[in-house]
Image (cartoon, rainbow, N blue to C red; front, side):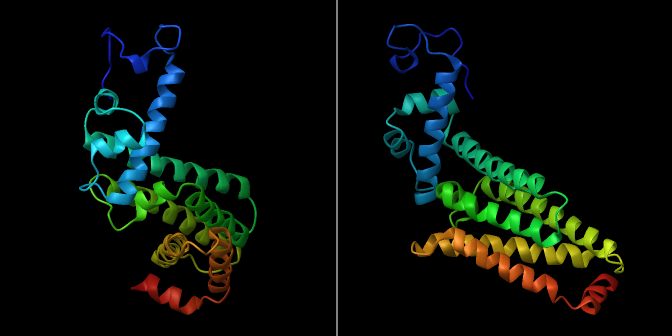
Length: 227
């Protein structure tokens, strides 16, 4: 992000009193620009999106965008990182709130948090998981999905140990990847239809996941781990 330093403030950097705006106001403006940029990138894709379109969406100007974010590529990176961090924070909060509960309740908490976040932030979700993802988005998405998979795999291993089952290895990671993939594709379908409630879709995905966990063939899990 470019530091304006001691340069003469632009009209957008001044309050109604003529004095420079506070850092809080600057942060609020940057967040507004990121909201607009995220929407344009999600709708058009990185290549087709333009700084002109983003500036218009943000009710701002191209010079202001460049002053705050340097380039279209940097702005895209900020959007992807913010989207991933926002979703990761919601999942983390859900995990903390459900800590100590049963495996089913913890999986439910994480799944519903994912669907709720997708519904509340559809542009961020499409930026991360849409077909137009490019540049820095795949890496941010990979980090997020890897962390979620590792967390669920850890819960599965803890459950197996507490119930006297043989230790789960690769099978826990494979099972966790199924659950994460189900959440991603389910939320994408719910948002894509436009008529399906993401919350209801999340509840259905949770029911599907819990049913699968209850009926896993332990012998097949053991076979995966001995491969």
